[in-house]
Length: 442
Image 1 (tube, rainbow, N blue to C red):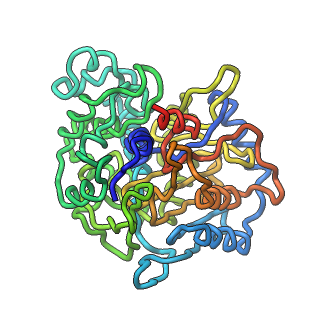
Image 2 (cartoon, rainbow, N blue to C red):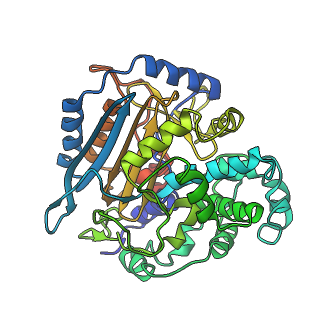
């Protein structure tokens, strides 16, 4: 099935560059200090871990239409793991809580931690221009004006490489994705595509771009003299004691894992398994594999101050608005250095990241003090559907996902939804539904 509707293609064009690896948004927060205060309040009001409620909310996610999902939740010493639905929809193999999963842009948090380690050692100046370190890759005006910090908080103005890296993806996504399944792409080529792509925002304004984090990986290699993925493995993954987190060495995952199905808004019908894929196209922006239990442990250690010194963790949590708002309104999502602050529908503020690659979605959030975390992985992507005019249809799957995350983070029973909070928009694109509708009208 091809994207026969020009308006649907316009929606896909707006969302794809960021959704393939991009942040699951949502909305509104104040400046960094108020956002952190709100997060602390959310900790104090968290409900105890309720396993029966978590099981019911997770099953509701599958019943709403998600093929399968697995998750981990931790609150202090209390832990819960669960799985629902199918790892393979043809054989009806059940999903298991210990399965590995492609985590997409959650990789960015790991990459940012590695660069902040180098910043602590004086090898990287966050406010130095990238051209100081990589003059051949980013020459000229961009090399002089784009700083390392701008790469990490996506205010560089550099375009995203994802669309040009998959020629024809808007016309025939299944064909384009099949053609790239075993293709190896060097990071320098991805940077070249990103630098040539149009920027969504001018320098200094947040515009999510995977090119930024491929450049971050090349910067890490330049200052350490080591392969970036090997450095992150030794100094972030192993330091955190994660047992099932890794950069894949081949298109095939090692260890038990589900099939990962891509629908591309109904343009690939039936949804196709892309669990076998060469992830060189994502690299230090989104190639990693992990488990929900490992991600819960990672964010617990990160926000608990065990992976970075206080000065570097403070830099990581210095945020910018993740999207434009109307005058007088504040965004409910703010992006730091590989980490975002997010206001959930119940009103609580949390820190974390999400990721989506073809067929695989993952989301991890934590209270600011590192006491309570949840991570979930699921195996059907771009399941959302649109009207012919580009307006999104009702989306019970995302509703159920957000409801599960809110409950897992300890939203007290009966907590009303916060007024003015925008629900996450389709397919993990960091744009509000109103922006999608505007794109569809063009």
